[in-house]
Length: 86
Length: 84
Length: 112
Image 1: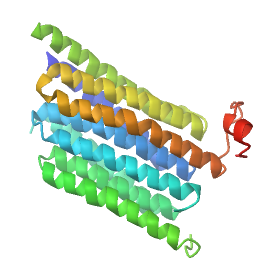
Image 2 (image 1 turned 90 degrees about the horizontal axis):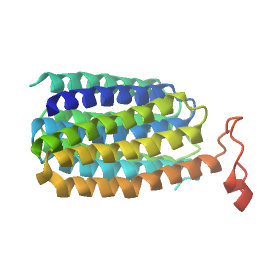
Image 3 (image 1 turned 90 degrees about the vertical axis):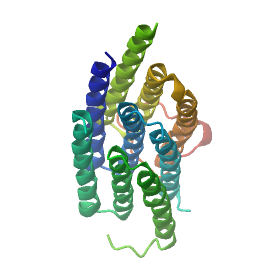
Image 4 (image 1 turned 45 degrees about the vertical axis):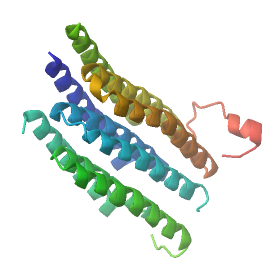
């Protein structure tokens, strides 16, 4: 029974990914695109966890952990650049 | 390969192409750097879905984290010399 | 009992995905940058945490790693959104006409 829920959740996550991509492509200013980048990485973490559950391999979760750390560092670097440079 | 994995691969490829187009067509330099970071981030998810977790981890660490950070550091040092 | 956890995990997964969708929708529909940060970060944090909770219900043996990921997202996500909003405020982003409260300017005198 869990398979039906997995399919529904994966479809909804895919739609969310496309909406955030729309904002990333269109976004008028630089900061809008940074926000869209942040949201895209967070949605991708959910997609990684879903893929780990579908494949049944626990090692995929390590990649999600690395991903969360690095997206945080990237957003901090961009924000400091937008503010006044390093 | 199940149908769900195939659908994930197609969707991620669409997002990858969109981010790459932004990196090419974008007017400002920081957005190009950010789009390059997004390309390698999505490529890392794609590697993961295609069952290569070690490659995905390396790509996420070097391609996204280190390269983006280094590019922004250098861009803040040479600011004023960009012609966009 | 296993049936119950299957149902609970599936429902949590769908709820989390729905919150992610709301975050993406708010990112498209909101009028200016600060509202987009508001919609994009809070809703997606809750959505990711609900998704992790759903996977914990479906596979309890992955609990520790998922708890670690959840704690990490819970710590880093508000910090990144706050740093981003402050940088946008200092670099002079225009607000929409409907936004009428600016506490950072009132309290610290920083002009947008």
